Image (cartoon, rainbow, N blue to C red; front, side, top):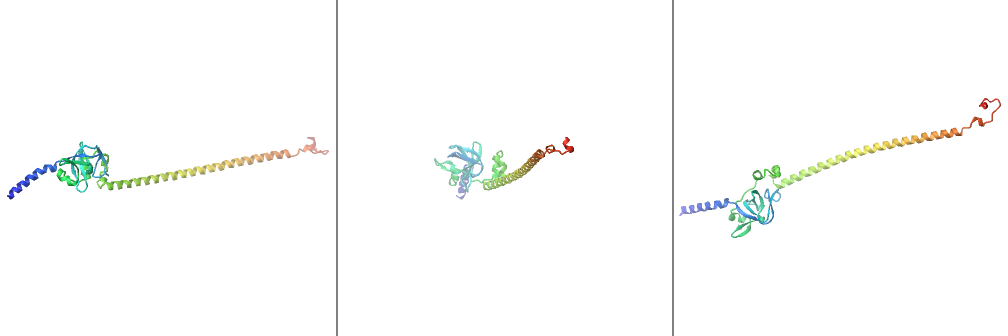
Length: 222
C-alpha cells in the first residue's frame, strides 16, 4: 500500500511538472508599458496595446510584477494590467493564482536579464548603475545633473566676471580717451583765446605816427 502511494505521488509530480514549467497565456487590460525591470522607474521597452495576448514567463513573489513575452520581445508588466483565464473566467494575475495558472515564481537580476535581452538598447551602457536599483540610478543621475548645473553656473559666473573686467577696461579706456580729448579741446580753446588776446593787443597799440613830431625827431621822417 505504501509503495502504491509513492507511485501515485510520483506520477502526479510528473504530470504537474510540465504545467509548472509551461508559460501561462495572459491578456493586457490596457495600453501598458512593458519595462526593462519590475518597476515603473525602469525604462520602457515597448507598449502593449489593450487586449493583446502575452506569454507570462514568471512573476515575482514579493511584488506583483511579471516577466512577459510580447511579439518576441521580453519585459516586465505589473500584474494589475494582466489577466489570465482561470476556471472559464479571466482573473488578474496575482500571487494567489500563480500556482493554479502554472506561473513560476522567479527572481530578477539586471545583469542576467539585460545581458540576454537588452544589449542593443541605449540604457544598457548604464547597466552597472541600474544594477543597484532604480532608486540609486535616479539619485546618482540627479547628483550628476546638480554637479553639471553647478559647473555651468560657475562657468557662466566666470564668463560674466571676465566680461565685467573687459567692460571695466573698456570704460576706463573710454574715460581716458574722453579726458584726453577734453584736454586737447581745452588746450585748443586756450591757445585760441591767447591768439585773440594778442591780436586785440596789437590793435590797441598806438601808431607812433599818431603823435606830434618834434622838430629834429628822426621818427617823424618815416
